Image 1: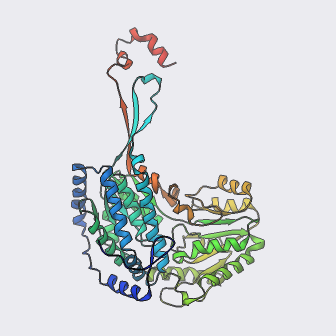
Image 2 (image 1 turned 180 degrees about the vertical axis):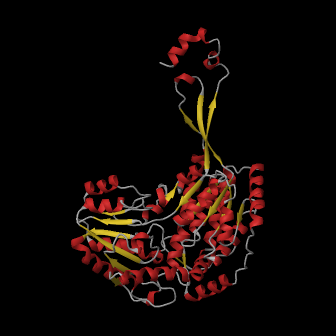
Image 3 (image 1 turned 60 degrees about the vertical axis):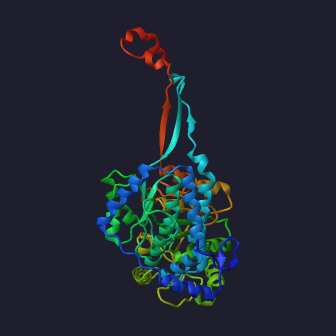
Length: 497
């Protein structure tokens, strides 16, 4: 096992290295051996091999736990290289954000899986009803076979390895297709997994969007896709040909709703944390904010203050770059469209550099503006004033159901009303993003923001088959229910009463 770099510990048990070490690791990651792209002709044989070895020896508890332990150790030993590699793909991404969102997220998920795995695997007894007495019934969570995982570029390690670890915990083999938009990280993942697992247990396919389309059409036993709603529709259509069950983790316009009784300084600090993290390239980032109209200008000022306080030093070293030129052009086009419409635009921080979009707010864009039609997926935050809470709730409900909802308020009755009157994939009250990190909560969307859920027990269940088993004793009354029925008329009347 590779020796760990000597470095200072952080509060999360990760490591913090000096500038010289970071440069060395960046150089090391830059010369990672380039993995050959997978051809479409290789996909089906690889899947067949994974399925054959799974069928020959389905993983039991000891192997599943050992696999999870080795994956955890391999990732923990490679955290510094991981952060440097992701930084190189982004052209600038804060190391702390990679350690938190791509490192700690996987380590804590694996810890949760290992802690509860034995209990989740245990058959659960269920009632049969008196009519089947003395039979007994149970549910057994059995593995499905081979799970396909298609992961995105925005959190290229955690959104690949958390589903992969969950599928392993459920007793499956895994075929992973990481994003082509983070090629260095995809190569790093492939090397990490090749060192950790036999190729007949975990395989990786590398390639472009055309290969991804062929991958999604494979006859998996389950397919998990994380990405845009547009691509999610294509993935689901491809999977439908094989009746492959899918978990779709998509996106959408996740709103924050600030009630009139909530202090704006606190709301601004928590909105900035969720929106500016990874430069807004987060599927559950707050996409727009509804605030009582009388305090709209005050919210602009509060966001400006907290953004300057957190990022106004070091020439934006703590602010991530946009992943590629196409995404950067899209965001600048959205801002140009807003300027052309005469909207008020406030740049909260002056940043320079390649593929940089500064934290920006746009005040009261119309519902038909480009900013309000599309998921933004960047550091641009529309602020919309409302007159009444009814109006704000109606605004949310007039749009597709979001992946996340962020109500801010101190009045419990008001918060309960928002929760009752809206539907979202998940909710964090009085903060942002944090419901994603709660191991015991399922994560998933609803409607156009996704289908199905994973994380913790929900993921284990999604990637297992809850197999119902009825144990019938040697002697049982069911044998009496046979023709001629006239002789058991009284028994039938009793059973159907």
